Image (cartoon, rainbow, N blue to C red; front, side):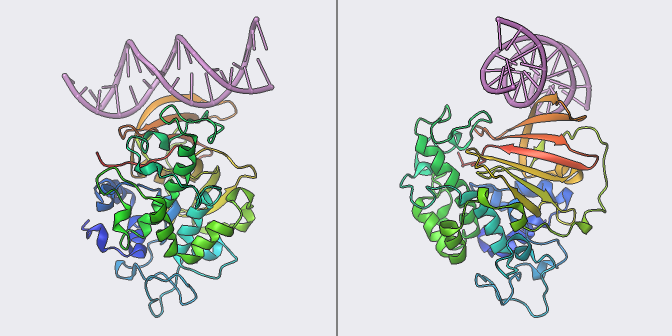
Length: 349
DNA sequence: CTTGTTTGACCGGTA
DNA sequence: GTACCGGTCAAACAA
C-alpha cells in the first residue's frame, strides 16, 4: 500500500485512509508513516468512512452545512454514514472530522484543567511516557500519582494532552511542530489551544459542554445496526490476539463498533460517574479485534471470570516504557469487549 | 536460541 | 480474620 508522506494528508483523507484498511491491511499500520510520529490513537475514535467511497473521494467528507470544512464538498457525494448526526444530534452536520473531534472531546472535555492547566508535562523529559498510564487500581488520579510521577498535576495534564495530542494529529499539517520536535517534546498547551482554534466549534464544546460523564447514551444515538451482520464469526472461545487497539478516554465508556467499519463508534455509553482514570471499554465484533488495532501487545495472563463463560485475557503494550494495558474477553458468540487501561504516548527515542 | 503463550501461584482489594 | 475475586508474575511450554 503506497501512502504519501503524512504531511501531505488532509486530515479528512488521512482518517479515511486510516480507517479503510482491511483487516490484513490494518496490519500495515505499523508501517504507516504516521506511526513514525509520536502519538498513536485508536481508530475507534476517528473512523470516518465505511469505505464505500473511492480513494479519490476521500477527503471530501464535509457537507455545505458543516462549518468546519477543511475541504469543499464534492457534488453528489453523500456521506454514507452521517456520523455527526448520529454522534451529536444537536448539530446537523455530517463532517466526519467534526464527529471524530466530538468523540474525542467527549473524552477530554471532562477534564477541568483542560484549557487552564499551566503545566506542560509532555515537555518534561522522562515524564511523558510513564505517567501516561494509570494503573487499573488507581482510583484517585489527581491525588494518587503513578509510581513514575510525583506530580499530581501530571495526571491532569496528561489526561488532557492525550486527547489533545490526537486533535493535534488532525491539525498536524498546519501544526507540524505539534509532534515531537526532538523526539521527546509533545504538544504544549499553546499547541493545544492553537489546534482547537482550527476547530472553533470543537473548542467551544470543549469549553462549554458538560463532561461526557453527564451525557446520556441517548444523546449519542447508535448507528444503524442493521449492517452488523455479514461478519464471519470465529470460535466462541476467548480471543487471543497479540495486537489490539488502543487508547483511552478519560472516562469509562462503551463504544460499540459496526461491522461495516470495524472501528466506527456505534454509540458511546457515558458513565454517570466520572471515572478518574484512563479507561475505555470497546465492544466490537470479534474478527476485527483479532486482526489488529495498530499496537503490539504481549499477553501476560488469562483468567476465568465469575459469571462469564469466557476467559479474560490480559495484555500489556510492548512498547518500551508504555504501561498501557488491555483486557479482552468475549461477551457473546461474536462480540468482544476490550478494556483499554492507560495511554499510548509513544515518543521517539 | 528466540519469541510468544499458557497456566498455576501469588498478591492485594473487598465483602 | 477469612474467603473470594481479579490482576499479575514467572516458570514451563510451544512455535
